Amino acid sequence: MSGMDPETIRVAVDISGLAITLAGFIFVIMQIRRLGQSIRTTAHAAIYSQAADFRTHLMTYPELRKYFFDGADIETGHPDYERAATLSELFLNYLEHLSVQKSHFAGTDGTAWIKFAGQSLERSPISRRRLQENKAAYSPKLLALLH
Image (cartoon, rainbow, N blue to C red; front, side, top):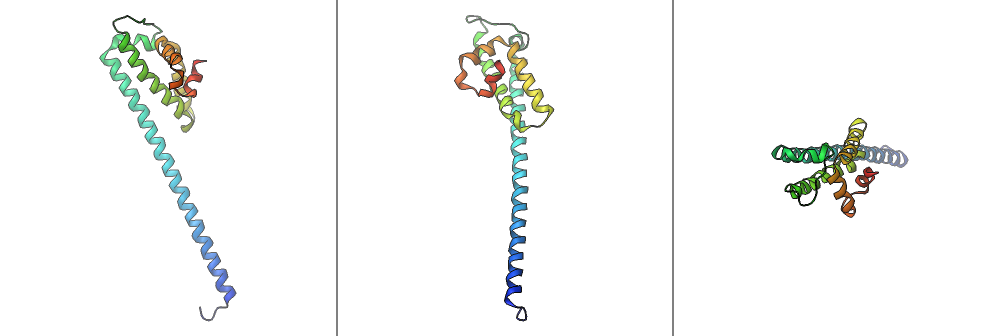
């Protein structure tokens, strides 16, 4: 480099700095994409885990299914009321997760989840009632499905 003039050296250093900066940006963008994919995968797994928990309860207590999918209502004082109310909270947490995460999943998955959540609220008087009674405890995205 002793034969190079200072201007050529300065331009070479500037170009090298620019190349290093560009490589750094590309690396950061790739890491952000990987992190985003990891977050979506984790959210998806959590949603399916909540669904599995809910289904496990319904398999254990199949007589409660009608309160969540068939439009049957249950009144306070019914022998299964407390179990149905607790299961309703588990179900609402699951539906809330679906409604909140919808924006993180493109296309038909997110749309299908929201449709399922809305239909589930329509078909579950106890879940609708518990959501109405505890609005402050749930996301506005889930509450919007009431209307």
